[in-house]
Every structure is written in structure tokens, then in C-alpha cells.
Image 1: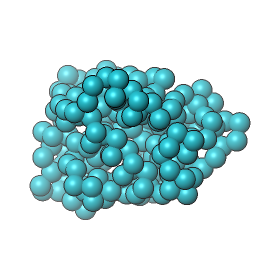
Image 2: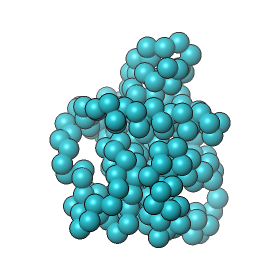
Image 3: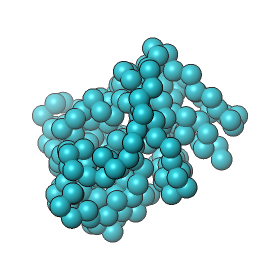
Image 4: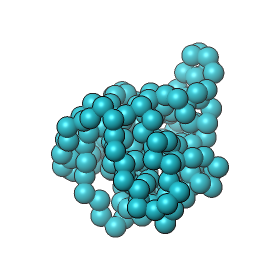
Length: 196
């Protein structure tokens, strides 16, 4: 897909991320940074997960990690299920979960009043006014994941891109490099729950 077409297709996504960082719920979570290594090691508890596909380029930069509650884990599992339903692989699930970790900390956020970035909602902070769907659709984990994956599928060569580039092309964030910090935790979640 050429750059002009990509910008027009994904320009609809808006700057969903900006409000989350500036005044949204992301500040309410404490993430700790872990020293990054050039090559990531992913432990798979279940057979059949191709761990080489999870982080094919190694992690980029320092990695963050947050402790997840049951609801956040359920949302990660919903992203994995939607990824499988869409016919996409484990790498797509890693990109999706890392994106959601950055956008909402895997929380299915409703409207947050003044702390909200315009009308950003859900796991991916998608905006109804930008064409992502209705508020009800965007706050449905399966729908919002499928919408994100639809955008990802439209990117030529997304499978070979670093995570942050693939996520940014779909999300059009004001902070494009921020997605990279969640790659290890996203890969660990996919390794743990892909076959559960």
C-alpha cells in the first residue's frame, strides 16, 4: 500500500493514543521498565506455539511490564480468540496485545469525561468519530480487535515490520515508538494463552 493511500486509510484512526498518555487512565497504572535484550526469550507453556514468530526482530528498547488482574487477562484472551477467528497468526496477536497494553493497559475503557482523548473508547482507544464503529461496537473486545486486525491486514508486509511500525501504521499515534515497550509482555501472554 503506498504512503498516500495508507495515510488516507489510517488517518481515520485519529490520535487515540495521545489522550491516554496525557490525561487518561494510563497514568493511573504503574509500569516498571525492564532492561531490554537484543533477542527475546519467550517461554511457552503449551505445545504448538511457534515462539520464533512471536518476536522475530527481538525487542526494541527498554521493556515495560504491569501486573494484570483477571479482567485484563480475560481481555488478552479475547484478543487472542479474535485473532484466531480472523485467521491471523500469533505475531498478529502479539502486535494487538502490545497495542492494547499501550492504549488502555488491556482495560476495556468507556468514556472517561475530561480525561478522555476526544471520544476514544475500548481496548484500542478507537474513536467512533473516526469511523471505527459505534461506542457499543468499539467497547466489544472481539469487535475492536477485529477492527484493529482489519487495519493490520491492509498493511503490505506487516508480518516483517517491527511491532511499533505495524501498530503505528494502524493506530496513527502521536507517540509511535511507545508500542515497542510492551512487546515482551505481549509475547509472553500469547505464548501462555494461545493454546489454552
